[in-house]
Length: 365
Image (cartoon, rainbow, N blue to C red; front, side, top):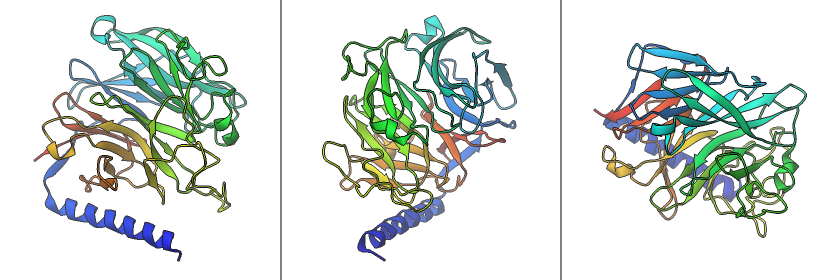
């Protein structure tokens, strides 16, 4: 065993010990919000009236209204493509949602032979969605039903970010500025490209590039920092601090290897490419992310909360610590987790994954 492998093993064992000691403290309770099941959900968004909207990949949005109340609304999404990792993905509210009812959506669109990520706006009146309009489509098309990205974030200046995956078989596209694959894209609410984007003439929408399959995206309201996380291949999952115009390495620089065991690149770092803030090797399969700000869990203030699919944990990552610290403060959950949000009540809400998923509310006992 190499020194690097031994060091990684020690780090992993340290996390596992932390998980176990936290589980024994029995301080917190993760309680199901309902008796019903969600079908392949992807995103969790709280409304001003405290109810939640949950996207399901088959094209429906669920409105939760208490323990036994659930309403499903099918969306008339044009050319919705549901296969593999595709379907209806993220949903986010406009800043003026309380007045306008406007939301932003992402979904996969097209056919098996030619599909892509699409971004759309819609209006929600509390009971139904109307005025669905596609404002941005990712190009080029691909023939794989995976690696869409699709996570949305609203920036303080009113522009939006969306993550896009590399399409799996098209990983070289992540390094090409004339491709929208493997990027974060910045766009206006009407779908146009902001004139101050870093590559305004060459690549009007590109904000950052060199990404694999980014599914976590969050803006820290306190500092303005933008954090993204993405799936590596076999290893090499990472958290990045995004800066406009920067290259985040994939597939030139990665800590991961191919699923076959083959080497993807000899480089874990490369000149003029940004190294990750956090590298997870072995993979944890990060699926979403939020920043905790609240009084219910003061010990977590300012930390990133990361849901994972493979590790089946909600991780708390403290980027302010040197070295970066991560724990699993709610170790007894032990399920595949799809999304996380901080509720208006200060509790942590976690969306589980799969065909019989649910929302968990985490609060002190």
